Length: 146
Image 1 (tube, helix red, strand yellow):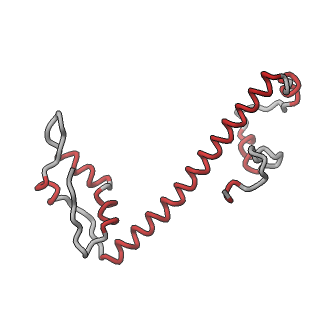
Image 2 (cartoon, one colour):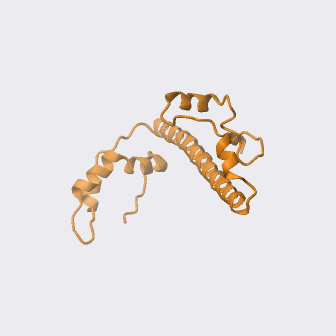
Image 3 (cartoon, one colour):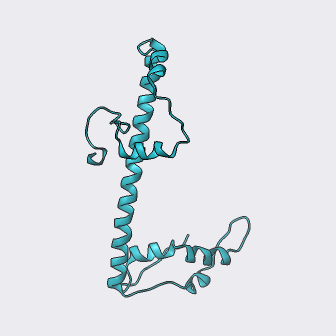
């Protein structure tokens, strides 16, 4: 473990991102010594090549990274919420089948005959013409509003 003291002419958050970039990790991997406890010597770290734009640009880069990360984090949260809702739906559906509240034969007979390899199936789902993207939790709120 190495503690870095960042000079005032650099953004510490920018430097954190810079040190975690692929090109720096590749430099560290090439400099690793020791098999039981791989490490990189401080003298080698001092010689790493880093991209060091002016401080203002460093702040702009960090701002852009944070904005893009926020979009990714939101997408991950939405996906996790959808997975959770699908699991709840699966549990509810299984319980309904086991308790006899849902007659599987009647439900299966009502399903349309669809070829799962039909490329038009994806387009129909995306267009949501038949309500295929119905809100699983029944709150009728767009998932983006959560």
